[in-house]
Every structure is written in structure tokens, then in C-alpha cells.
Length: 308
Image (cartoon, rainbow, N blue to C red):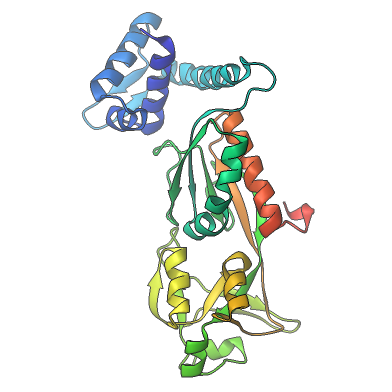
């Protein structure tokens, strides 16, 4: 029995809650994963898991061993990285999940420079605006906009997304240019709705000037749950958009989006990298997070350090 493989299999079963899911993420057969865990239990002479037809639960002994195993695996990963000497670069597979517009417009275009710096890191990048179960899906970290709702995760604030309100010239030519945000509530104007993954609903936007603070919900003819589709709907003239500056900047310059409501502001949206509290920050994850911080310092800097 390879103790490294056995510990890795056990850890994944605990985190996934299933031999089948663990086998999928480890690219092994379910039989192999089962045998590795059984061999580990036989070697330790303790029962690590309670198995039923529907679920796998960790025993008290298994919970203690799990905490030690994840630290040992992480230390082994770091030790292997450092074996080649002080100049050794991080390596290995890294699974991350990021919003689709951020991937398309910022992260993916910058990946060649990351790969040149860290050629031995393999990135599996999930690109979506859905809520990802980090543990169940064996994801090392996620990048997400908005305040973190899951208090079980550790979050590092990596940027502030400045927001603005925009519309396509075709939309404004057809419906007219609104002067006050309240016009979006009781007129012919329409927004493009964004269905947030946490609620599945379109949420109101907080806007303010020197004298007023409003929450604008508006009405829509289409609502989507993907940032790229949201932008595409606005460019097609289907409604008014609330966008971070990294998504709007190029279209403003090209004249395909027009900014609205001069003098009104929206609170910036915080951007976080989040990861599980029991997940050791390996060298490869550490350099990935630092790279995201570098990128967002260019595109969405945290100007007020006290809010970070």
C-alpha cells in the first residue's frame, strides 16, 4: 500500500462524503479508492469511516486522523516543491472557479505571463457565476464578487470593483435617455436582470448622490445568470446595465455603451479569493492568489486599505 495514495484517498472521501465522488476527483476507480481506505484502516487498526448505502461519515478516530492527514499531505507537497533547491518553482494541479467575465477579460488573457513564471502549475479553471461547493467539488479556491456569505470560508479581499450604469446607443435611441434613476421604476425603461446565484433573483441596486440614496430594481424583459450573457444582452439593446469598470471600459471607448446618471454613484463591489479553512495554503495556491492580487491592483485596486 502506498500510504500517500491511501491518505489522499481517505481525505477526498471525507471531503466529498462519497467514494464515488472521491474516485471521480482523483481519477481513480471506486474500487481502487475503497481498497486504499480499507488498507489504511487495516494498517492503523482503527475504523476511519462509517459506511451506509447512502452516505459516508467520518468516525471520531477518522476525524482526528483527517486533520493530521491534510497537514501531512500539504507538507509533503511543499517538501517536494523545495527538494530541487531554493530556486524550485511551485508545481502541481490547481482547481479554481472564477466568474465568467473576469476570466474572459482579465484572468485568461494574463495566463501566458503566469505560465511563463510558473510553467509546472496546471490550472483547471471552472468559469461560471454559480455557487460552487468548494469541498464537495474539490476546488482549491474561488474568486467571487460581493460580500462573502459563507462564514465557513476564509476570504482574502483582492479588489474593489467600481460600478457604473450603462446603456447601448440603440436602446437610448429607441426609448430615450433617462435623467434620474427613479425613471427606471415607473416608465417604459427596462433593465437587464441578473439572477444572483445565492437567491436566483434579481436584486435591487443601491445608488446615491449628495442628497439621495435609492434602491433601484427596475423591470426587465430578460434576466440571465451569467456575466457574459448579461453584457451581451445590454449591448443588444435589451436594457440598462450595472457594470464593473473592467467590463465597461472598452465598450465606453468604442461607443457601444453610454454611461448614465452623472453625479450618481454605486458602492464598489468587493472581490474576494476564498478557500476552506482546513485547506493548507500550498505553494501553488499561494502564488496563484498573489498573482490575482497583482492583476486586480491594476484593474480594481483597493484604494481604502482600512476596508480590506
